[in-house]
Length: 379
Image (cartoon, rainbow, N blue to C red; front, side, top):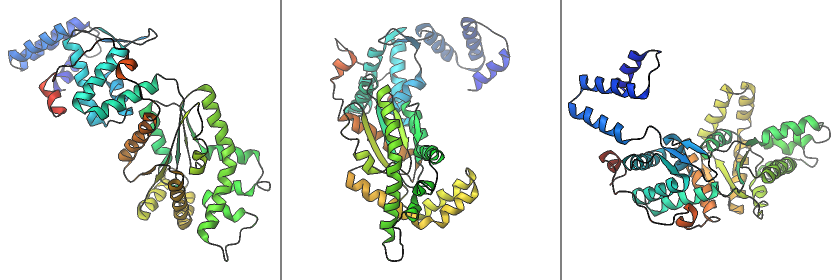
């Protein structure tokens, strides 16, 4: 990094060719380091191609990107710490072989082998499943439910980035559109918060009724209204065969359960939860920095109802066998949701590696490609 900084200062805004740049770098190395370092640098540059080109099945050619390669590995359920050495191992293997152009199927097979050697068969299988899904054209519909303040929107955004999904739809936005189109006097239950919607029900009476039952009835009445709009969004994604994340308090487990029979899309529901009252209060209070403070204060005044609503959603998740993900740590929650997605895909895609990657003959990676990579992978 120090050497690169010095070189950048020397170059300023001037433009030079790559060969001249290598000569200048070699000269700077000679001034600062042992001659053996310079020899290794020159040898590496002589063997390594300037760019490794990756050719997709439909003929599109792009430069190999270690960042994109790592992102694909992380989408298959690996952590960044696990993915980085595998990407390095594959890249260094291609450099040592003098590869300048590689088909996607061969690159993917090499990655599969590197995963098998470094992290075991289970990690390699997850990668195989994700690769098969990505090239299947099947639409993936991820449904994220949970009570107010549990981090649905934040996690949905992070998940979309990790899985390279471009469409996210919030049920809060759908509700706002429906409110604009429908006067409050016609559907009063739509024009209130999900945790106190029961107060707008015609038969609402809290004098003798169970408060948990009242909150559940009001929430379900509002969620049923939103299910029409949610269905429309999901149907559009299915028709266009694109991936979509639908998130919001109105994504109730029963709604997700009703979609399990779909044969033209893969549906993955989860319920997000913050299982400690103190932490959920803190999250809701923190919303005041991003939304009007009056809303945060109102939510805190109604915290008991919000907590009761979460209890109802968790019981419904258990009943409908929808995975519950604790969101006490955002990174861990994100990794767990990715794992849930891959586990669901594993029930659909069960291809053989040679068939999936189109390999006609065996190819193996060396046991270690460098001391650094071997140490990073535990070999």
